[in-house]
Length: 117
Image (cartoon, rainbow, N blue to C red; front, side, top):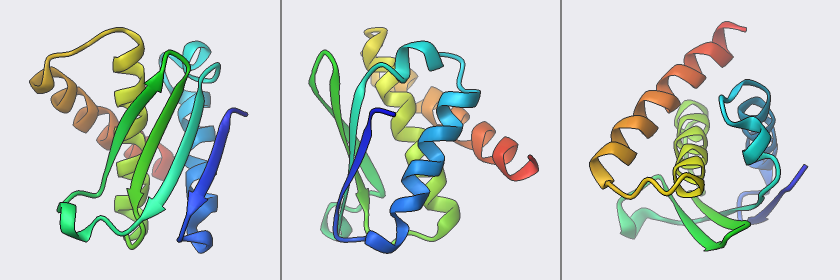
């Protein structure tokens, strides 16, 4: 597993591990995704008015920043959304409209599938 968790929401770190594992087991690009190093960092994003974002540090490392006070549903959905952005980075998808539309579709589908399983 190539994920590490940091930041100030220790009580919900297990959600990041579970979302990562689910994304690897059920994602369409799991063979590529699981080879990358991902850090999920929790902090207060209230002033930024977002639930999370993803930054590519280099060809093999990403930092996913997640708001530290999300409801469980939004927590999973946000992680799936940001994980999809990593896949898009890997494939060089740059168009913001395409990136966001696809990420919202994936977060919705994966969360529904996870809840149904």
